[in-house]
Structure formats: structure tokens, C-alpha cells
Amino acid sequence: LLEEELAGYAARTRDQIGVELGIAFIDLRTGHSASLNGEDKFYSLSTFKSVLAVYYLWLLERGELVEQPLDDDHLYLMLNESNNPSTSCIIQRVGGLEPFNDWLADALGMDRTQNFVMAWQSWQCSETLWLPPLDRRYLDGAAALGLPDDGSLLDCSGEWCNKSFTPNALADFYARFYNGDLVSPQSMERWYTWMVKKPESTFFDDHISVGLTVYSKNGYLWDTVNHYHEAGIVTTPHGDYVLVVFMQKHPQWPGAWTLADVGGMVYTRFAGGR
Image 1 (spheres, rainbow, N blue to C red):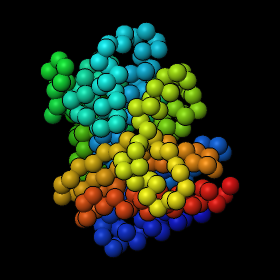
Image 2: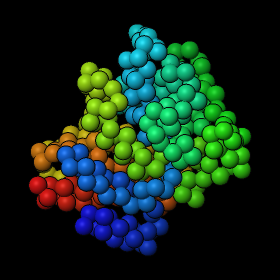
Image 3: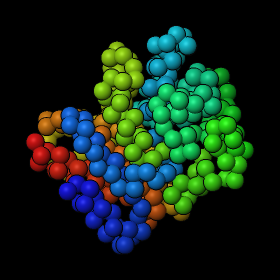
Image 4: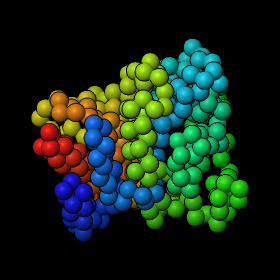
């Protein structure tokens, strides 16, 4: 029923104003899921930062990096304020984009051709002035990894992109994190502290009167296509769920009411099934 309702809403908004949506939902108690365009690539923008933070914690727990005094500040700024120079600092701390992309594919099992960050080159690390190099495998190809050299990897749902996730892959990441499959409870608690959103910083609870707690990361780009995304874990009095919403081609910037509409529909169906 949820999938049908989301499909109907998406069709109406696409026909009326041209918005394209990618949605993924997972009930974290039952594992029930629903999606819309869930296997399509979307220009993921800053939504990757929540995954990057888990990679940092994963390396830290394995002794593959040693925490530095400013790391916690950079992680908080990256996740709570979407600070881009701090993101570059964390990319530097984990060894660059190439090992991060390898981790997505090899440790998390994500499809390498659909889930990656090829470039983050507009912001130097505020601390070291380091600029992340491109992961050129996504430009030049890498036959051993199944990466073509024809530029097709940089096509996300009809739009050029240098970083990509599918809604289903990102939702599965959040579910695995929530279930304790990726890092320890202590590391999870740190991540939740960095990620928790104030009511004015999330759109998932706009149409909902009961108290929700949202641990999400957004991503947006204001241009002729107008992207606005939000993805994360929502905790409610009825249980918890993952919600990922990618949105592009919205003529009304930022078009956040669309995220609020989807958030309200998902919660209503979720709570009504309890």
C-alpha cells in the first residue's frame, strides 16, 4: 500500500511540475521495505557525508587511523552543518576518495558503478589546505573493477553527477548501521550525536504532530535542475524506520514541501500498521 501511495504521489508531482523522485523506506523492526525508483542512480550531493563518517569510525576501530584533536569537531561540522572544508579534512584523514569507494564496494557490497564519490575538489581542508584528488577510475575507467571509460558512470537519472547513490543502497546502509552491523555501540552513539537534527533542520517531520527524532543528512544544489535530498533514520513512538528521498527537477526551490509530503505519508502508513 505504501509503495502504491508513493508511486501515485510521484506520478502526480511529475505530471504537474516535473519533479523526479527516488524513495526508499525500511521498517527497522520488521525489515519491510518499499521503494520508488530505488535502483536508479541519483546525484547524491552531501548525503554521502553520513556514510563517510561511519567509514572514519570503522577505520578508527580497526586501528587503521589514530584520532586527532580536531577530528571530532570536523565530523560534527560535516554532519550537523554540512561544512564542506571539514568534509575535506575527514576525506584526508581516511586516506582519500579511492579507499572510501573501495570500502563501499568491498566491505558494504554496494554496486561500484552506482554508489561512489568521484570528486570533492571545491573545498580545501581548513586545517591543512589539502584538496582531495579525484578518484580517476570513474573518469578513465578500470577494467578490473568493471568501470567503463565512456563517461556513462557520471550519468545519474539523466543528469551529470560526480557522486552517486541509489535510494535502495543508501537505505540499506542505514539499516545495517542501525542493526549494529558496521561499528560498535560506542561508535554508533558518537554518530547519532553528530547526526541528530533540530526540528528546523529536517523536513521529514513537518506534517507530523507527535515527537520524532531524525538522524539525517541532506544534500542540495540550486541550479536549473534543483536537487534537494534527505536521508536517514527516524525514531518514533511506534518504532523506527529508514527513509531516503532524492528529488530533482523541482521548479520551486527548494521544494521542501515535497520531502514533507513524503515524510508524512510514510509516517502515517508506518504508525497505522502498529
